[in-house]
Image (cartoon, rainbow, N blue to C red; front, side, top):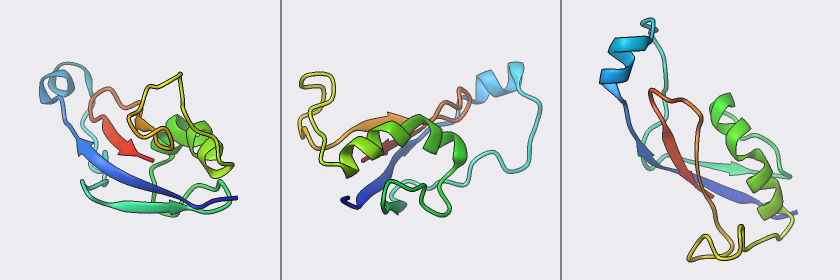
Length: 96
């Protein structure tokens, strides 16, 4: 099984939506742009957010097994995927 490199590409905070709908929390997201993780044997890398991992796990597993070309040409590099976590207030985009 191949190792899969996961890179934090973009981190956004929709402050207007947080102000309207979210209860304040101290540590919402500690991911930083440029931060990288390595998934070995299709496992969740240490330090990677559980919510983000849930969103990308199937893509990472496919890439780890040599799969490619998600959705018939979605990515310019067929051996990659761009995935975002499911936090509607602070979505983080990852490149696998």
